[in-house]
Image (spheres, rainbow, N blue to C red):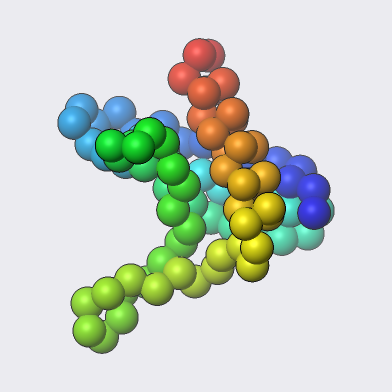
Length: 87
């Protein structure tokens, strides 16, 4: 898997846990939109796109199948986020 493009939309609302909304392209063939960068007590994390179910919980629409892929995606997204903050 090669992430070929990352677009960051920074969220500037003060006191918001949501810091950015991300779109990325994998292998120049698949786009994923609405990945969120969230800051919580443990630091910054990513949250995959999700929809609300009938019972009020959220379920991911798309997500990495293994931890290695999630870690790779997280590292690339958070680096792009930090780069966007510094520009």
